[in-house]
Image (cartoon, rainbow, N blue to C red; front, side, top):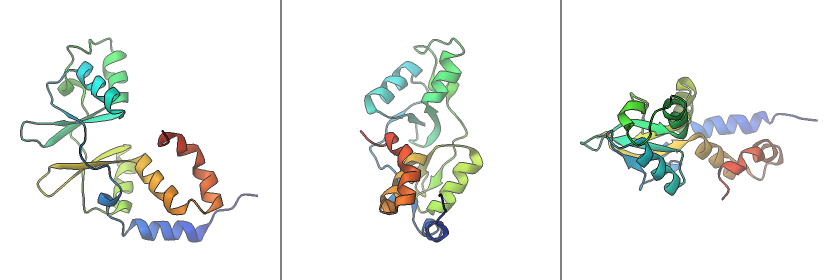
Length: 165
């Protein structure tokens, strides 16, 4: 028999309204590229860094876009473009949706759902990149906080492959 632990979900929502994203996000060093870097270079950075996205930074070191593995498949490979000559600026997702480091986890999750994104760059008051948070980071956070809850652990176990190495 399956049941939903309403008390747990209430606690998690309340907690999400108090947890700042800076406590969950991935901190520097982060992999970055410029708008003029080739997709080939960017894909190699992703491979070497074992990451699924690269933040594109302008000459003022402000984040201006993001490229994901999915972008490379859909906007380069599927379109028959040459990754050695295709530039980041040609395929990056822009305008870049970001969140400030003092934003609560609940608001971050709402923004991710609203914009249908799985990765969200985190910036400071000067719009300087200070981190990135992913859906996997959020799931991992809740898993670690609640791994002793048998029901939740079973429900989340299928996501474990995304952060186990």
